Amino acid sequence: MSRTPLVAGNWKLNKTVAEATELVEGIRAGTKDLEGVDLVVAPVATALHPVAAALKGAPIGLAAQNCYPEDTGAFTGELSPLLLADVGCTHCIVGHSERRQLFGETDAGVAAKAQALQAHALVPIVCLGETLEQREAGDTLKVCLGQLDASLDGVTVDGDRLILAYEPVWAIGTGKTASPADAQEVHHALRERLREKHGAAAADAVRILYGGSVKPANAAELLSQPDIDGALVGGASLKAETFVPIAEAAVH
Ligand code: PEP
Image 1 (cartoon, rainbow, N blue to C red):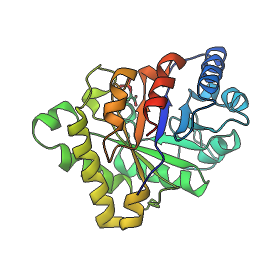
Image 2: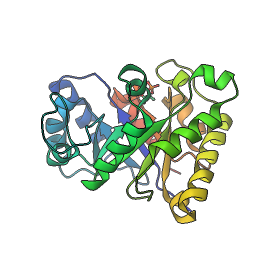
Image 3: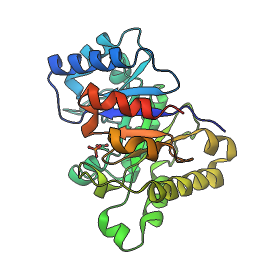
Image 4: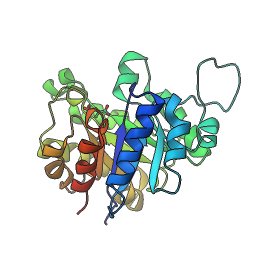
């Protein structure tokens, strides 16, 4: 089964409105003739609206980096899928390891957010991955499969409605990357678990991205693995000169 690769840029807490607009214009120009790969950018919340305007008419998705699973109400400081859809978002990252580690996000919270996003026709990009300690203890697959099961509780598992991202915590922002073979092993295990729990059609259609220090120099080898369907890119997504070559490397 062939899945269209997808490359998403997680800009984290970076870029003023002017900088974000300049970056997305560079990405738009640099990928205008690129076919065979889906692209998504995830700006900081204050830049979502201007980036949506800059993306008008371009085949590039717009993701938020987090959400709260209620539509409206007394939830000071939060953003809901309803409002993210209103501003032009198509996707939302949930369960990023920085949110799990720094803000106490749990698998149950991730599942609630993913369900709320799907209710507003937004596609959750559900992140999971093991810490260095867990990898060294030989627990990588157990941890990742446990996160997968719990983070997808009540979530519709369908290729058009869900994206997964395997991001080993020790590889995020560190310059260390999982070897293509190690990453493939986890991606394959995740897909087999999807097959077991959600059926072959869903398992074959859901895209599983790899994230963790992906850069132009290592993208092609990682993205050529059979169960790696694209990349979630942090640091290298902050410049069009490094994001565009990764998008190009995903085309096969
Ligand atoms: C990320 O934040 O999702 C990420 C993968 O970051 P980096 O590419 O910088 O490791």
